[in-house]
Amino acid sequence: MSENDRHPFLAGLSKHRGAPPTCLVIFGASGDLTARKLLPALYNLAVDNLLPADFALIGFGRKPLPDAEFRAIAAREITRFTRRPFNPDIWRRIEAATYYQAGEYDDPAAFSALASRITEIEKAAGTSLQLVSYISTPPTVFESIVENHGRSGLAARGLGTQTESKIIIEKPFGRDLASAVQLNAVIARNFRESQVFRIDHYLGKETVQDLLVLRFANPILEPLWNRRHVDHVQITVAEELGVGSRGGYYEHSGATRDMLQNHTMQLLALTAMDAPASLNAEHIRDQKVRLLESIRSLQLGKGGDAVRAQYTEGLSGGEPVTGYLAEKDISATSGTETFCALRLSIENDRWSGVPFYLRSGKRMARRVSEISIQFKQPVDGLFAADSRYDIAPNRLVIQIQPDEGSTLILNSKVPGLEPRTQPVRLSFRYAATYGSDTPEAYERLILDGIVGDRTLFIRGDETEASWRLFTPLLQSWAAAGRAGLETYPAGSWGPAAGDALLAPHGHAWRNAGR
Image (cartoon, helix red, strand yellow):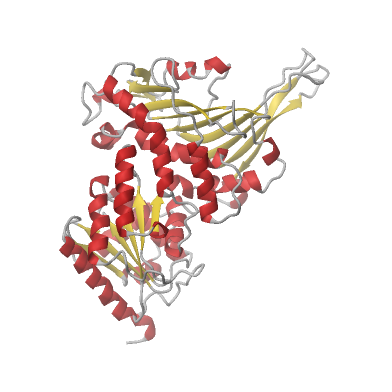
């Protein structure tokens, strides 16, 4: 047996940023996330020579499968969903180190068998492997998987060495504060916090990663990034689609748990946090936690800081669509919100008095995620004092999806003899500047997990800080049932009550994505 036969990844795949030899185990290997995102991400990392030189992949699931069948399924899903053309030569190298392990998530014997399988792979490779466990399962089995890592010794593999075990956990990190605290306690019993990577794929998006660079590498912006110059901030995470086949999941989640408490709050934290002491992951995460802890408790009830609503039938993309209550697996008396809007107040020196507006929903006018920072207009000055000029507020819009980039809105004189002004847009788009072959979020996050970079992952106290804000709101809605639940037609920007949330400060939602 030649050296390259024994180590199938040595021929063409290289170590990156000090990544140690690795065995990645995906729990939930037959799931939709694995097919659409995780397997294609691993393939694209292989195309870019970014996987460790010694690398093995194990799919773990309940359904018994031979290795060969899992390999065939993986090849099929990668071909369907990869952003790159499928290259059989690259796949053969991945395939040679791809395996499948069947077992129940609550069965300690299955994890002991997994540990033995990893040992066999190590012997064949002739080197020790770090274990990276990726939990891509329903949250009901998170705790069982974590506990069985501890019982089987998988969690303690290589502690204090380069091959120390790591665990990557998909959201949701609990359903409320109590369940988040409980999950963190289970994790802490079995892993050190330095081994834990709570993943939110929004943090892997290029524009989100660029927020720190935009803010702190451009000295013309940071002096303006405060209450003296910013009038208000709007963050929109809108989806054009309805719940589709996810009705059963969505009924127990809703827009607030599904998008606002996690993705949208991460955008808020990176937008509003103070400068970290350094680019060290813990310094950055420290500032995110401080920001979340400085948000004032939400005022509940009518006229408070939150609005919830459900979509009714309407038009989406010019086609008629049903309302939420007519979707599959949805109760006819459901009180689940498909839209949520919040008005937040951050009580610190930087942002006191600046309202932050957040909204997220299904079946909205278009699919778009963006951050809009509107700057204050001067109350005096040359043009403010001259009624002939209509001066628009300056605004910086950071678009997360679908067309990643930034736009700065300024005022310009309209050419001609009349004294007229109009807003103009200075725009930057990633695709236009860097090309369209941008790595997807999961590629970056899986690679960071392998090399141990925690910057774009969420710490335990950060999850609890966010749930501390949202839990009283969710409890009050659960107690109210459908009382106070607004409606909005599919294809719109949400209910009128969402607009009224901004009215006391004289603000209005901008036409997001434009």
